[in-house]
Structure formats: structure tokens, C-alpha cells
Image 1: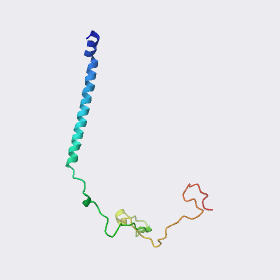
Image 2 (image 1 turned 135 degrees about the vertical axis):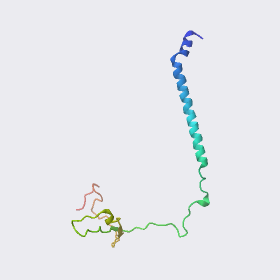
Image 3 (image 1 turned 90 degrees about the vertical axis):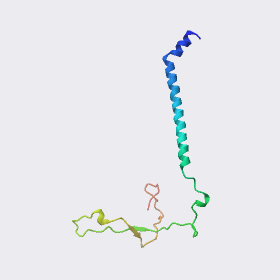
Length: 122
């Protein structure tokens, strides 16, 4: 071994290389620890449900949506116009079934949306 290699091996660069090597070992050890911890947590969890425990379709068949037009209930008025109502006097906001169940439809000649690019109603 010549003098130049011996000097390079004992210099401050070796400390940096050893430090990088130790950091890598610590990272690998941390990853192995995290994997083992995850494996233990997974082992303690309950097993996935068996096929007979899965949800089943009701005997009456699938449940379908009900579509209806709704309209808001009126907000109660105060007895005196100068009095104001507080939230607990108003209650929850409710809606009721509308008397007219026809859905609003698109009218021919309208653009369909604001800024839709159509000619609009003429």
C-alpha cells in the first residue's frame, strides 16, 4: 500500500463515508421495524367476512329511488313586526311534498344554461 492511499484512508472523508453507511443501516432497520409492526397489527385484525356473512339483496328485490318535487315550509312570522325570531323559535328547516309534481322541462328556443352559447329565447 502506498502512502497516498494510506493518507486518503485516514482522512476526514472516511468519517463521512462511515456516517453515510450508518445512516443507511439505520434507515433499513427502521423500515424492517415498520414492516414488522404493520404485520403484527394486521395479524391482530379480524378476518375478512366469509361469503355467507356478506350482505344480501332483500327478498322483495332492489330498493329504488323515489323522486318527488319538494317545496320549503313557510318561515314562521313574529307576532310583532319589530320583534325578531331567534333560531330556537324557527326550528329546523323542513320541506313538504309539492302539490304540483310536474318537473320543470327545457323549453325549445332557450340556450339551456347561462353562457351556453345558444341564441337564447327569442
